[in-house]
Length: 385
Image (cartoon, rainbow, N blue to C red; front, side, top):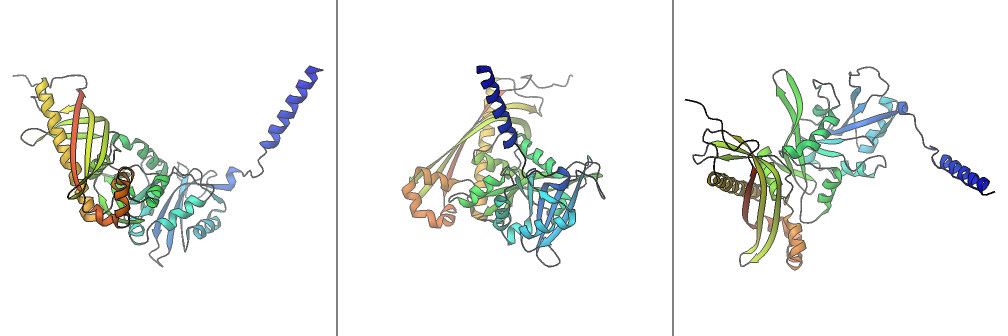
């Protein structure tokens, strides 16, 4: 009797699982156009939105590459209108769950702002919050998706992989849409996005990510170079890797330090002259390149390299902060948020005028660089007599 009862219970569970897993909204893959990425431009003809989607072609057809992807473009007044009308071009519903990137043209980012474009994306039930955001340095964002790479692979997926590996370079910030929106909605910190462009090399062309787009609210106001972006990441405590070049006593590039880890601490202080921001960084590195036969062969020379590396890091962090502070007046470093957390009463007095207050802040930077190892050898290659 117990056995029969147990079998009956198992049968009921199995039937329940079948009922629950029934795909009431199941759609055949061939009935969908899977979106890998989207580019947002202004139509030169009428100034309307021009949306370009990179689609993974699951069925094949005209103008299909070996990698199985194609791009289509359509203009309209709103994102939702364009996306819906694309069904008439593909004969399929666009499926957004596999989208990896959103590329916005600089023209759109500067003139129109970006809220009305990304608002639709975040409301759609099929979209994901881990899609990467870029600003195109080319004339249009569409050019990036239309790029025919030598591997004929899906451009959007290549860009997503570049962002996952960006920590080894630190030439641009890694920004997902959820983080971008968080910055837009926060007081005391401004949004940034990586810049993407087409890199031409001999007969080949490919997409490349380098530099930073700087925003105030939802409008782009300026850019940082790849080198400036690296030191901006140091100031934000977002550095994960990369290379620190170090000069010798004569100012010649001689050593390359690989960043192993780095920590930045930010402390606001009230002084007679106003708020001063103290920035302290501690960076652990490995000595990966010595472009001198003298090399570094003893403890004293290692200390000298560490000291010069720290001094140059301090100088470059201050330089990028000053540029953003004076030219863009955009708190991309999140100093306002730090003041809000550590000096809440002071923040209340400057909350409404933070853009102006940020431009008047004073800064001090102290950077300590530690060489933990010199790779496989502590001596340099010496040419024989």
